[in-house]
Length: 200
Image (cartoon, rainbow, N blue to C red; front, side):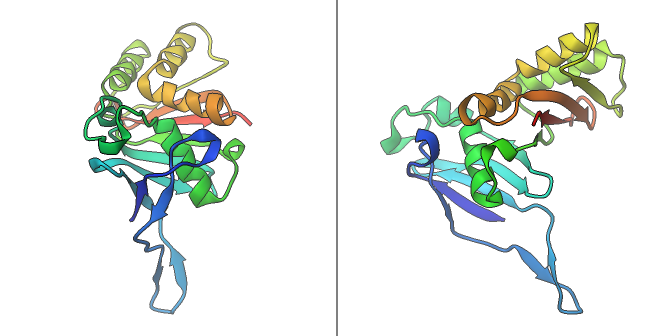
């Protein structure tokens, strides 16, 4: 894992500077080859705020971000901000800063945003509702897109309106990443992972 501290200013006026303080990217096999690990998980902290804010991994080949944990509510509510006062720090800003910094790609290259094991309350409720409306069991897969009709179209819109859906839409509004074209939910209602695909 690597640890990042957010404490400066950077791209598009976003108050973010990423500083790597610990790195372990590769392992050696018995034959002496360097084998890349699975996408590395970055722990995000902010000066003046106790604990880890977010945990995010980046896969350059897939052009994706995976958010394993997000606790930005503490920032938005002004908890422990110290010298930063009431300044907010959006999840979308952190996601894009980490993606650009670690993949060395452009914001427009981002293709997939994944939220693993969703626990955020309104997104989780929308995931449960989608399963029930489509009569999909706990182990089934929910997949809806921008071209869906009728009931699936409504579910697609509801998922986009959730906290995590809105965070993904901000990537388009703020950084000109693609718009949401498809949402796929795996892992069931209680431990669901929401994968959001962006258009080109």
